[in-house]
Structures are given as structure tokens and as C-alpha cells.
Length: 256
Ligand code: GLU
Image (tube, rainbow, N blue to C red; front, top):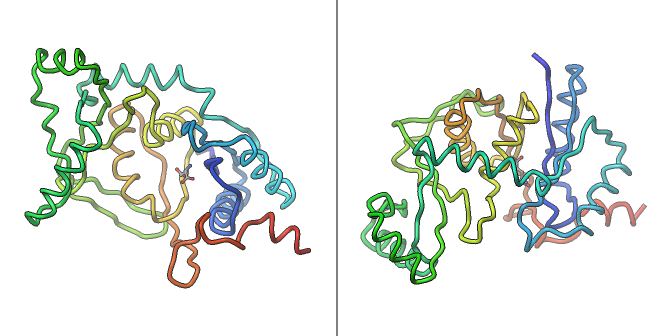
């Protein structure tokens, strides 16, 4: 099997020790096995992605001596995601929803206050064509959710061993926003298939995304890569993030 790993930063901030660790492990894993390492810029969130962050990430990676076999930008792949959207609709795995943020928030609060987990109730699956048209005529635009199926999603994690999720505990995720833009969940899966990624190694904050993505891989008729979820680098009590300063590679570089 061809070993291909990827590091997929979102250019919404600078490279910090947390994501650098993920990058390094992917890099070393592929190098050790004579494989390839790919850099993918996850820039579909147009509001938060910035060119200056992308340039800073690339410059830090070069400074650290990383070399990649290929580089991709998700923002250049929109046509491909559009095709996948249509395919999933045809397969009845993607459905239109018209709830507003406020309506969803009310549902969530009601569920929580009656002791239920805040799982999407799939009300949109029951909408008639007429009701949908009605919403459209009010100026509402649909967002789209992926329909999770089956009863369990399980995989052997490279790091954590056997992981399994009961499907009833997972909300059907939103893959396409009201403004037509695609979420990380779908773009990442489509790219991992296209880029022929063999191993996805990332932080354990992605474990539940993996469960969903395994179903998207299957719905698209693709076998999924091996997954490994790393524990997160923590700063005292909190996850390392852009909010906690001082861990950026750039600041380490400046200190030298
Ligand atoms: N852009 C995602 C992130 O930075 C990538 C996660 C993944 O590796 O799939 O969290």
C-alpha cells in the first residue's frame, strides 16, 4: 500500500506547538515507511481564512525544514464538492433543512431541559414538498444534513485501539451551509479520497468527526483510511489554541 499522510491546517491562525506536533507525527510516519507527505490548506471557511495566516504557516513549516510532495487548497476544489453534493442527494443521504439558528437553539434547549441529549430530531425529513416551497417563498434557503444510518460505527484506531459510537448519539451533521458553502466535514472526506490518503493522524478532538466521516466515505463508495487520534497538547487546564498566546512557532523563531 502506498503510504500517504497529510497535514491539513486551517489558515485561521498561526502554526502553534499543538498543530506542529500533528504535522511532525504525520511527516515522520510517512518518511519512516517511505511514503509521501501532503500539505492541504483547509480554507473553505471564507470568513475566517486569511491569506496572511496561510503564508505564515507555510513559512514556519519551511523554516522547520518540512518538505511536502504535494500541496492542495480546498478553496480550489469547489466544483468537485458540488458533484459530491448531488451524488449524496441522489443516494438519499443528504437532505434539505430549513430551521434557522434560533429555531435549532430552542430545540436544543428544550431537549436539554427535558434531560435528552441535543441530537437533531430529523424534523426536516418529514417536510412535504409544499412545506419546502413555502419556506423558499419566505426567502429561507436550505442547509443540508447528512443522514447517518445503521446502529454502530466502529474502527480500530492506530493509537486508541477499538472505538465505537452508537449512531443514536450522533446528530446528522450539516455538510452544506445556507449560503451554499461546504463544511470541513464533507470537504475533508472528499479530499482524503481524492488525494488517496492512507493514514489520517490528527488530534482526538476529531474522534466524533471520524465516526461521521467513515459513513461519508462509505456513502461515496470509498474505503476509508486508517485513523489515529493523538491526545491533545494542553496548557495547564486548557487545550492549546489561538487564544493562549506564546505557543506560536513564529514567536519561538523570533526568540532565537
Ligand atoms: N483543518 C482541520 C483542522 O485544522 C483538519 C483536521 C483533519 O486533520 O482532518 O482541525
